[in-house]
Image (cartoon, rainbow over all chains, first blue to last red; front, side, top):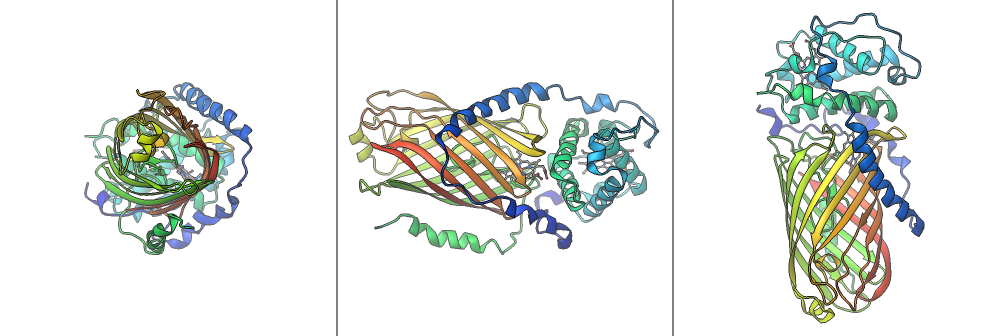
Length: 205
Length: 283
Ligand code: HEM
Ligand code: HEM
């Protein structure tokens, strides 16, 4: 793994600057510090910290294991599945047109990132794009059923490190921002993908 | 009136100049995942260390940060300059110099802090249980006379802490929330600026620190922090610290943090509140 130490991948400053204009645009949302803070804010705040930590841990331990979820074998591809309900994450993301655009955007970013592009040197990109799109659709409760190899199998023995994984997530995040997916669905999707980390990393050398 | 902040100004300006110069290296961890530099030089929020390590280094990568911070409350000001290195997202080493000016009482106290933080386990994004780190801070006062006069037992001491951080995706209104909890064993009075141990209590105390950070936009975070403190000195009652902060990440290399501090009573002067500004550059 050569590339990772040397190559910066700052989503803000990297190539295709125009694509990244969106990153800074929320700046004005945050107004200046409010100087006066009522004393009363603090005690409840501490409580919230405690609850967030405790409640949060208990809650997340029920996260489904990505690997078992995708244990089925067979070819990648979409199969008809029950319709996505209107309040699904899939709908909130913007459905098929947006996911297609995000994946397209994402592929350009991968192609331009010398840290990870080599992994895809022998990959059929059309197949990958379709499988990845189906995966995003499935994981966001859309009308697709990802039936490709499990994440552990799809990535086994590739030599992927956390640095690579982070880079991929960062590209996807940037693509979502660029395609104007709002923060809520964007972060929910990233949260679901983050749970695939252990499966992707399961069989690395 | 002499203000200690002024001497930090050139460093501040030099760091700001780096804003426009895209530096050559950045780790692959996501923007902002190293937090900023806390007041004792470790990566964290403003007053409490976090479970994450400095910079954005990941496996096989290295990172370094440098920071200057200035706090000004009613009767005191504190300047901190610090550097930290991160080896493969496993070990963080840090060094900080604190300069504490007693603007009302007169005088200056200084302290050097060497820190190390070892990531024991996990990742704030990918692990159910977040990330856990064990840290140590070796603190030594430059001149401990005032601290001794107030009743401090020692002018050097060591803090040990266990810190955990976890990121909750889309937790609040679709925004990501970072939670941090730190458990610290310490004898330090006012973080060590008033020495270690005292007439009231000479031994270690176990204190809790916590913070929340809400990621408002890809480069803005707002949050609150709380730091429990021991109360060792009979003549100088000590309060818990708390603050509310906003941090802005210009890019992977430069961040600026502002905070409103409530530090309570310090060395006999009550109700110390004021502002905090910290600039960090990461390579
Ligand atoms: C959340 C993270 C990830 C997801 C959801 C994901 C998803 C997928 C999917 C659905 C496929 C197609 C499997 C198939 O049909 O054969 C695939 C293949 C692939 N993935 Fe990932 N992946 C992730 C992370 C990564 C990372 C971090 C890397 C490396 C930097 C990577 C590199 C590859 C490569 C090279 C292939 C193609 C393998 C081939 O040529 O057949 N993936 N991924
Ligand atoms: C002072 C510290 C931090 C700041 C200023 C910051 C800032 C941000 C902001 C503004 C976002 C975008 C939220 C959105 O799109 O709605 C974000 C996203 C994210 N942050 Fe942080 N963050 C900080 C610390 C952390 C830490 C410590 C972690 C992990 C340990 C982390 C991980 C993430 C991840 C994974 C995302 C998701 C990507 C996204 O939403 O676009 N952040 N961060």
